[in-house]
Image 1 (cartoon, each protein chain N blue to C red):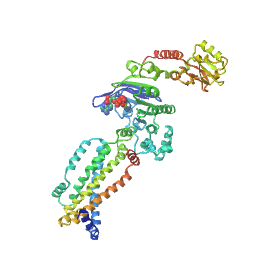
Image 2: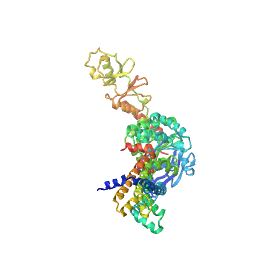
Image 3: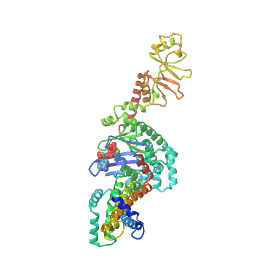
Length: 226
Length: 385
Ligand SMILES: Nc1ncnc2c1ncn2[C@@H]1O[C@H](COP(=O)(O)OP(=O)(O)OP(=O)(O)O)[C@@H](O)[C@H]1O
Ligand SMILES: [Mg+2]
């Protein structure tokens, strides 16, 4: 039997769809962990990226530090946090936040730093303050890249939030852990399939969000230059 | 009035971009800064709105040192146009133009109404263009938006850094004409940077020629720049064809037009041949009863026709180019003459009636006389500032 048929057999059984261990409540748990991690990562990385991009100092460091950062294995970090801080909310939150920060930070930074210098010059020359240049020109023009960073971060987090299960917290990762422990390949495959579908849905949600927040002029411009 | 008082700009890497500049830019005039690449034109311009701070000396705007002004407030009172337009891609044309009024706290509807006024002023149709985005406009239209945006808060001073160099020559010429037209109505103090001497001479009331190293070579009216270059550098810079370009400033009214070779169509061929021989003219201009030109008759050809026929039935060469001595320059008369097959151009009045015809000899005499008169007028004043 293939992965898909294992998964399908497991998924079509009605008992997977109800109760505290059912797919709906696990999905909600999973989304809650992911959402909180993404929110915190955004609150840290977006302002930092905006400021570094705007002032043009430390951009080199951003790229290098995040490259090193990305090399840290998330599972390793999880174990380290557990060792240092014990089990608890921080144990799964810190690795997930750490995972989401690099793509958001780098894209935000590059979005702002990459704004055409002529645009910034024109904005300044017309009498915008430094702050107005940031909010009225750099941020709107950088929105497409910022959104790309958020989407990448979100998908990383959703795919990796399975590690929360490693430390006995819920989420979709439980199916994989429990399935492996009890040699129930149907559960492993089914859980993995649900995670994949969720990641695809997140992708869709961000595509929709992008349409909402990217300024019309930029969207039309991108389309016409394609 | 903008005054540069001993201004030097040395960038942190040691480059001296502008060296001890003294320059007065009078109100209501177009001052063009021209010179080869890297000679400090942009730096000079940007010291006026404090995008660059001088290392020494002062820049005064109406007698006040700009260094004492709040930079943002200063800049909102100075229009700024740059080469690649710097239009905001996320804002519509009208919102781009409304930028400065909105910054200064005008209501959105108010600022947009103003934006539409300015679109009309620069020749953009508000109903079709106002809601477009910059990328949906041609290069020339984008430049017009850039100019409208700079004018939106009605600043007395307008700074333009190579505003027309990114568009093709035909559009550039049109934009230059529009700027001249706008200026005739608005009387701004315009400082325009270009490396194109032709443009400097065309749009400038005054032209400041820079030399490499950020020093001023000459500040003068275009006429005097062409007529009395201060030194070999300026002479070379304004070009070997400066003599011809200078003719744009001499009016063609000084040209002595030939009238005896202009004949009505009713003249007989025999009479026409006599006139042509007496005047020593190989071509005769034939005019209708309304004195409008019909074409040129070649004296040599007339001899083969029946002597009692009239010019009305003769084979005529096309009239060629005409010019209006009252309104046009010697340059226009010269061009018209060079471009006509008969090596003669027809001078007409406003009603299109013939005043007379040119020839190379007549042009040469007029050009000599005009140059001598201009040099006499220029000399007692002495060169340069
Ligand atoms: N920010 C800067 N830092 C260091 N050097 C600079 C800077 N900006 C300009 N320069 C140098 O100063 C000199 C004058 O530059 P500027 O841009 O004023 O010249 P320009 O006359 O406008 O030239 P172009 O016609 O090429 O635009 C050049 O040698 C240039 O390399
Ligand atoms: Mg320049």
